[in-house]
Every structure is written in C-alpha cells, then in structure tokens.
Image 1 (cartoon, rainbow, N blue to C red):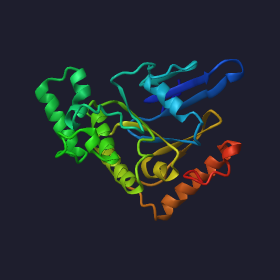
Image 2 (image 1 turned 90 degrees about the vertical axis):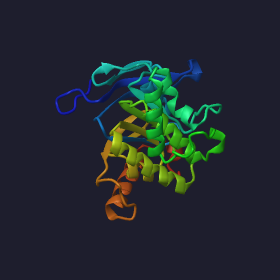
Image 3 (image 1 turned 135 degrees about the vertical axis):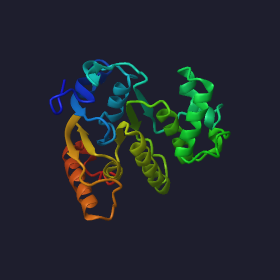
Image 4 (image 1 turned 180 degrees about the vertical axis):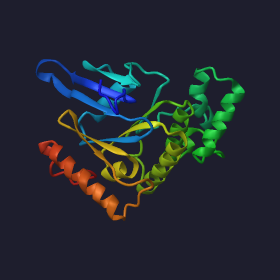
Length: 266
C-alpha cells in the first residue's frame, strides 16, 4: 500500500485494473492504477472522455468490482459501498416523489437517526446550501443547480469520510456552475471532507483542487499540485500559470484521436 509521510494515506489505490468484454470485444479500461491522497483535501481526476475516470470512481465507491488490485481507506480494505463514502453524480439522482427535506433526510432515515435529530440536520443542511425556503418543493419544481444543491446536502448530511463526485456540474450553465464551485468550497471549509472530483474541465480543476491527478492510457500518469490558496482568481497570473501547466501535461497523455480537441481540455 502506498505510504505518505511514513504512514498509511487516507485513500490508497493499488494496482487496480478493469476490463470489459471477451475475445475481440475485450477492452481494457483501467490498467494498474496506483495512487494515494491525503485526508481533508480536494483532488481532481482529470483526463479525456473515455479514459476510465468514471469506471475508477465507481470502483472507489464500491459499485464496481475491480479485476485486480485493492482500495484502502485509512489502511482498511474498502471494496463495497458503505457509510464512509458518498457519491454525487452528474445527474442529481433525487427521488422525484419526495420533497426537498425528505430527499435530504432519506439517508438519515435509513440509518434510523431519531426524528428530531434528523429534522435538525436537514434544516441545517438546507440553510447551508441556501434552500431553507424550499423544503416542501418537489425536485421537478427546482432548477438544475438547486437539485445539485439538494444532492450535496443529502450526502454531506451523512458526514462521509470520502466524497466522490462524477462531473457533478457538467450539465449546468456557466453562471450556475460558478455558483456551485463557491458552494462546494464553502462546504469543504466547514466539513473538511476528503473529496475526489472527476472532471474534464481544466478551469474547474484548477479552481477547486489542491491536486490534479492526470489520467491517460488507462492509468494515472502524474499528479500536479495546484499553487495558491482558495478562492482563486481566474484573472491572476498564478491561476493562469496553473492552467497552462495542467493543459501542457494533459496534452501529452490525450489519446491520438483527441489531440486536436478544442473543448475544455484544450
């Protein structure tokens, strides 16, 4: 298991591999993925579409079983879903028949948290995400950004040790995405939850992360520390230098057919 500062890291991934299909249909998605991250930081997992980021996140969450390798949280094997980790998807995955408060309190109810305590936690979380006045609304009555706020409140109400996020803001418009970045940073300041954010947006990664893990050719190629404290000003030279560094590294590991990509990675 990888070591950091002479002790077991908070999250350690060692030799994880995954493939789909058989014979001519066999396709390797992950190959010998090994990395470690420290507790209490935000880490961005960045790479081209189809490079295996979501598959890796699903293995970390326990939704998929790796063909080889191991995942450890605080030195303990972690191969199944559990209360120590939570996931926020690109789609908010709210229950459409439950109102906002019921959605946020769903996991707490499953854990048999007493009613009074559950109501207190739900009220606190809704205030933190700016939805205190929306507790009785149904998901269909909310905007996309509001639904993602509910999704964040729902998982953080459970106080997970590890927050896994799979491009949670990709479907939002630019202004709402910027607002969600601010909210995520505010919540991280309050809770300090170790976070792994899958994204293909360089600006998002530099805005949010302490470290960028660059993925290419089915494995983690390198890690890039992001310079500067948060919040970061995208117009400052330090921010722009971070962006240039990440893009330069990314281009070395893009698939050949993606090297002319002009979207967010470029």
